[in-house]
Length: 393
Image (cartoon, rainbow, N blue to C red; front, side, top):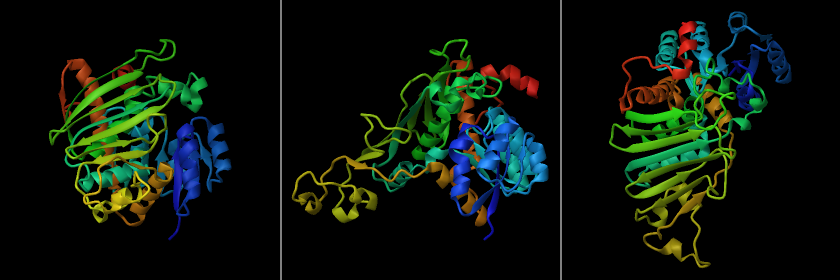
């Protein structure tokens, strides 16, 4: 089958770290063109990664002049809406980086535009493509830890860890392009992950996002957040993030009626020494254990009496799968969906829009000082973004 042509709008850090190399790595794809408001950077990336076409400063010109199958939108989130809709109207499949948009209304408008144009739409929620998360999801669905009742996921990392850390033009600090930081830019990963692992739609939300540590001259955006979600099946979860912790920390905890699961993806530390650890209270015989758990089950004595015991002794099982790059897996999955003409259900546009709804519900919760029911009945705009959004409209 002929290669699928991929172009990129936005040649910043996430494109350089993840997307260009993923396109180059996959035999099914080739880079067609690049676009960035910094034309010199677009040219540099086009030449470095051997784009077949040209480089552009104006994405509209690129969409008009170049023939492509997929466009990766990796610009600041304030521009995702207009760029995604313009590409959909050209019949181009959409890979939109997270966060999908800055408001819930914009997110659903992208979904509608993609469905109307009959193009595939996938959101760059790479957390679902880490091997440990996929293993965890599989074991949850097999009932290894029983009925899921509680969960928590966190991701804490400083502004200073980003390649643009020395640039005061970094969109992550700017309300006009970033809209929100700890909540919209960081917590979005963990909201999507916990919603997926819990396996139920979110019913209502309460939370807070505010600036508590960053100097005022550095940013006016939120640098810390906490939120609680209640799901339609009655389970509950919490998510936290910040933008000032100098060391990256992350953990996802899933608590079921018959076991517990801990997962880690972004980084390791002394308290997170393995990517996934599982404790199950189920009575398994050796041949009944799921394959991945049996593979990583080590006896505590030299003689493997544990293998003969019925049931297998209950203990924590630690799993360390190979570190596969989630972005390459994500693009490969999207390409397969296009080739086989199936919807990218693992990270669909509707999933992305629902996550933006949850995020916007946190902002609404701050306005009303109360729980907020989902789905939202009106458009919610991040508070620091409101004056810029009004002018854009």
